[in-house]
Each structure stands twice: as structure tokens, then as C-alpha cells.
Image (tube, rainbow, N blue to C red; front, side):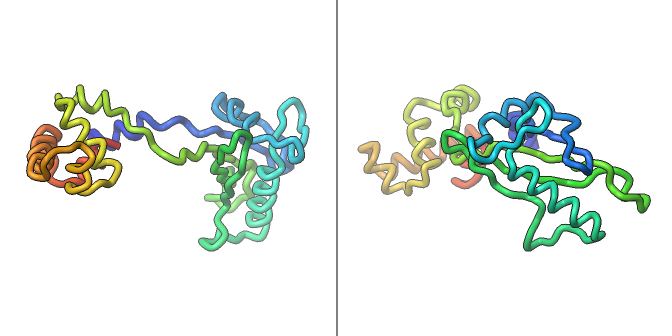
Length: 190
């Protein structure tokens, strides 16, 4: 369970935008303010007050608003989310939800939009793992190759060591990390 909390603690906070039902932006947190410039393309930005918001976000808000007006829940085939391509090749997940007094039968009053950068590859801090579990340099080398998906035979060829030595290193890594399989080694590492 501690690993789960570490994962949660290391996640960055999502950007949050709150619009009224007329697409007027009422709130944006610092994370959203930091992400918006990276989301804007020269052709799709619409000036709304002082803050520029990509057209794709307004499109998603319009879909959510329509569904709320028709009193239909979001469908599994077309959830209220999209992926926007930003500057420098970055991608962003954008999800929208109605807010307000829906639970007591009233119409929603606002739309909340969550923005998150999509990270293609999670980087592992092997130095931190080495120190945390007191791994040797060679055990860390083996750990890195396990996380890259190499087999024992491939690790042995990569490190120019015997396959039996690879197995011994893996046993020691498992004992130090208190895990029982390669998949658990990878899970603890990420």
C-alpha cells in the first residue's frame, strides 16, 4: 500500500478550469494556467477575457452541456474526454464534467474541465531505488534491464555474465525489495 501512496504523491496535480453554462471561464488553478500556453495552437485559440483557451476545450464543454440539457449520461462509446495535441509534440488529456445540484434534480450550474499532460514514458529513478533497497551496482544494472523487459539470457549477454549469475542477482534483488516475482520488481520500481 505504501507504493500506491508514493505513486499518488508523485503525480502532478491536474489543471482545473471551471466554466459557467455559457462558456465563461470562472476559475483556473495554477496548474491549468501553466498548461494552457502549451495547449494553444496559433489557429485554434479563442480569446475569452484575459485567458486564451483552446477551441477543443470549448467543444468538449458544448458536448457536456448538450448531454446535460438532454438529461442523458455520458456514453461509454463517447465519454466526455478528448486528447489535445499541444506545442512541442506534447499531448494533453482533457475531461469535462457537469457540476451543480444535479443530485437533487436541478440543472447543472458549471462545467469542470480537468487537464493532464500525457507522459509517454515514465522515467525510473534507479539511483533512488539503488539507495532505498541497498542494491549493488551490478544488481542495479540487472534491475534496469529487467525493467526494460529483457530475459535472463538477454541480460546475461548484455552484461557479459553467466545466466546463472543473472538468476542469483535477481534472487538478491527480490529479497532486498521483498518481492516474489519479476513483475513485482518492475511494479516496485515504477
